[in-house]
Length: 355
Ligand code: ZN
Ligand code: CA
Image 1 (tube, rainbow, N blue to C red):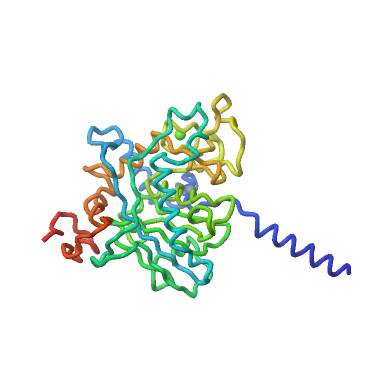
Image 2 (cartoon, protein in one colour):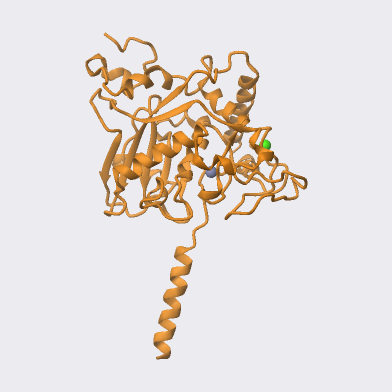
């Protein structure tokens, strides 16, 4: 009898431990740690940042009046039936991305009035690809069975078929999203654009299958698709809102997001203040680049949107080439015969793709 009670107690404890999940994103950038351990990388990030700030001051800025279409490919890499998420689950995620980035999200009304004047909407539309890199029709979803039970950020194995994953489609043309079983407590990670030139084949975002899409098979409290909104925010060069440093000296390089002492977990009630924001309106914990629960996130700022657009600057924007074929790669009736393989698969940047 006592034994049975102990067993029940132990299983309850195990359930509590495994059921407890706190948002953990793999894209934290501890600049001081990087400075000390990897000075080369540190200098590269600092140089990147100074170029971004220059770009933001430039008169050649990307106009927000021009819509940016981003062709998306979703690689579902699964080792069990539940990991092989449905098309409906994937479509719900694309819808969330469009709502959140364009500020068409139903819960935008929850943005406190004190912050609504800086709320930003990006003229960005995410579309599942209709043409693959070989010029063939596709639904923009790749399904790959794997024998790998758990993927990690350190090895990036999910991004290569030789290691049980799925190879990226040309990252100059497509946003690659991998959905797989990630090693807990990690629920997603992204590759920052400052790594694009050195590591083009791993560009994109990775999301745990339990937190991808809205409702359906997604698990509370990360069941509103905001993990992907957050990671795609990183892919578009956004940093964590608290600057990945405890204290007030960390920065996300965006001026209209208030300094914030640390990440926010759970779902606090507004207003919340900390040592950096001791006065109203306090911490912007409803920003997608914080760690708050999905249901409590609802905004990007104008400054964050400007930062995203800098990547598409016609002069030196690192993602500007994505604009060249985005329309045709996502058109309802793709002009299939017009494609040359070379341009879609490699780094051709001119308009010779049409015969
Ligand atoms: Zn993050
Ligand atoms: Ca800021």
